[in-house]
Length: 361
Ligand code: IPM
Ligand code: MG
Image 1 (cartoon, rainbow, N blue to C red):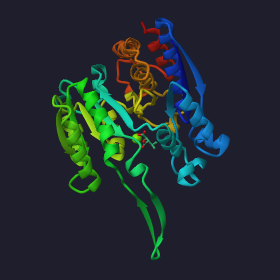
Image 2: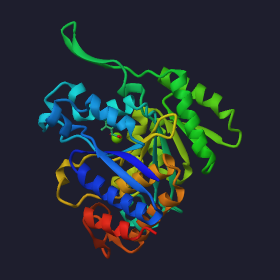
Image 3: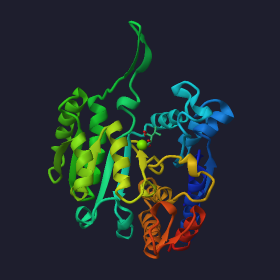
Image 4: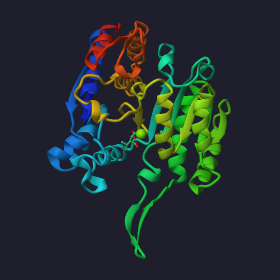
């Protein structure tokens, strides 16, 4: 088959890691008889430089017309870059929020899995790691605080800023359904994370999630408050299967979950709409401090490309081939700087891509 992929290299390390993911995709295509055609799209700081806005209508249209989107990362050093001397809706991250909204990508799937090979890079104690962990965060991506009304102005002579957190029952239901569907293919346990002891939006969240759970009698549902969840993730990560949560909680918890896998450079992600269309990106940022130095870890982006094959194109075998190649490279002892431990061989971004591509079969 022939697939059209819109690539968004973005800023910082984005171009380097997307290049490696395309390298691995191309090799996978060669081995399994597919072709991938790429159309590059600007978003984030590079789009601001070229067009004055972080995402143009044309860029969004190109993404819409593609079979799926592969994204690196956007943004620069907040507070220390020309991209941030402008209104919030013109900053690089606004492009990311706009494309998520524009493509209706409400379901963000972020798996966190501990490779035994990386146990040394995991900051948790051995007793806590135990048998390891394998969890998925299902983060609502187009609602809540990041999309609510916001303003900053003087009220009675005092500077005041407001952000609003809104969810309606339909938004909650559709993401809950996605979480239960994925749980059915895994260990059949959903932990719904909220702040129902304080927030109205969380109380509605809990009620709707409980309604959805009735359609999945095989799945165990647990509710957990977000502050407790942050603690449980570093105390007993093995207890989780699918964590279902709203936008901001998912943003924060997914960084935490990625770090306990050894490095945020390992965590892939898929953002999906109602159909099979998706945008695939690493969960990490653009790491401007190491951009262009060929030291970034491309694995999260490569694993995101594997998710694309599985979720958007139904190419399970091909996706597994990429995941196995990553596993093999780690078993053989190759590491980028972020996951390096003594006794391993340190390699750069591009070499890591080569090593993984060579092992696709
Ligand atoms: C992420 C990022 C984004 C988010 C930022 C860059 C807007 O942190 O994908 O987790 O908060 O969603
Ligand atoms: Mg984040």
